[in-house]
Length: 428
Ligand code: GLC
Image (cartoon, rainbow, N blue to C red):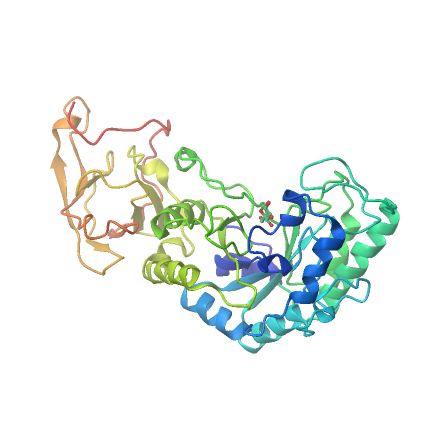
């Protein structure tokens, strides 16, 4: 298990968090990078701020939804690549307190989190497309220069440091600093040192001026990935429930809950945290379809979540590549990461009977035996643990997780070579 051995260890207990992409881009509802992706002029983009007035914003409603869904932390956009500050920065005029809304949204959310002991983090873009001193590098996500720009790395860094100091000083305890898009390629440890000095429980990601505390695979679903090892360093995978955008998008094509469950399962099993993003609308509401998807995922997560509490990644115990295995002590969890092809699961070469088998999704018992399987007729061991009569058709929209309790610890069981090749469940 990973540990920092300091207050940052909250991160390994929390596991599942809510990411929130919210800013003035919610007004047009196209994409959080509309300024860059549509090639908008800065002045036209800036004018959106005069229309931002999310009267329905109530941080407790967001946190209720997050908590009910099993999430234990929230990471809110303090500033995206458009440079708009959702906090009252003293070094920028392009900010929430200069909109008709006037109130400091980061502050309101931070207060609500602190009141209910919910871990609070901020996303902060290292790239600020609307700042005249931003030193363009010609890399992705940078919009065009405009007349009057004065690229200057040192001045820009003074500005960044001032805002980092504000976020780390003015909002109480900060648990996560989520950098994005440092295009400079420069390593400068003094930037994260500033955060660490001010906020000892703050975990920092790897997209700033050094590698930080944890890696951030994004929208990453390598289907072969589960065949190999768990992550070697602390990791947090992120994904949005919208397939096109992270910010609010009118007419978004949402991922299905089942697809998101597979992504989560794979990442959580490999010991990563999972940060699932929502995009509130311009009124400050998490749209009903987004809330519904989170609730479906939450009901599932709350029932099967023990399969990722202090568990190790144990896929090497079986040759069956349609499942992921996690384990602790004498308990093995079987995750049906692929759509089940039959109503049974064969876990060869495991050849030991559990004392009990339970489908965590519903709490019902699962049938099991050591079956003499035709498919194993050439193998030295001709029987294998089979879980059978699984109600897979009833669970067609969710990912089944089965808990197997053995009468001995499983840690010394033989490990099979993991090839990444599919094994067939049918007789050949
Ligand atoms: C992608 C998006 C960016 C978003 C980020 C979150 O890089 O382009 O807008 O903030 O994902 O990880």
